Amino acid sequence: MSARPRRASLVTAAAAIVALAAACGGGGSSASSPLPTGAHAHDQTLLAGRKVFSAECATCHGSGGQGGVGPTFNDGRLLRDFPNPSDQVTFVSQGKGVMPAFAGVLTPTQLAEVVAYERKVLSKRR
Ligand code: HEC
Image 1 (cartoon, protein in one colour):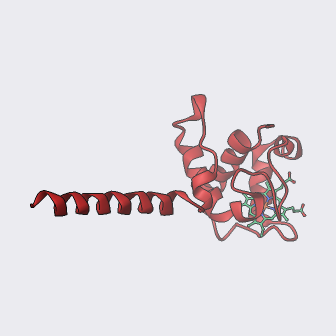
Image 2 (spheres, rainbow, N blue to C red):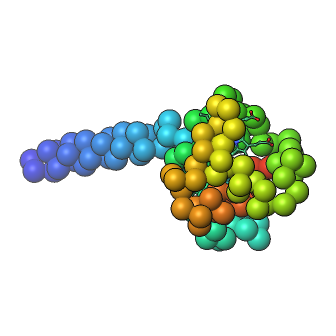
């Protein structure tokens, strides 16, 4: 007699967990920005840069850097336009036109992290 209600509540709990997982996994740009892989998989700079990118850049540049309001990063353009990473840090700090200036928004460390993430993870041709 007592087995039935217990099973029912287990099913309810399982359903709630599934719903919760779906709510967390769906939508949010942070969920879909690519993780660093291979030798870079545990690179803390790139993992931190991914968080900054998801929060501050993905809305315009796409969660995977595929572009949108801002240009794509997936075609290798960053390495061509900014052969020196410090020039890219300067660009992101100062902004240009629609691209906001992030100098007062991100710390120098965060700027370096997001630039590294864009160059090493998003800038691959795919
Ligand atoms: C409001 C939309 C918007 C946001 C948010 C945004 N960008 Fe941009 N970004 C642009 C636009 C538009 C351009 C093109 C600017 C131009 O050349 O006139 C651009 C250009 C760039 C470029 C230069 C690309 C190239 O090869 O010339 C870089 C690098 C860049 N953004 C990085 C970032 C980073 C890093 C962030 C987050 C910290 C970010 N952007 C957030 C809109 C945005």
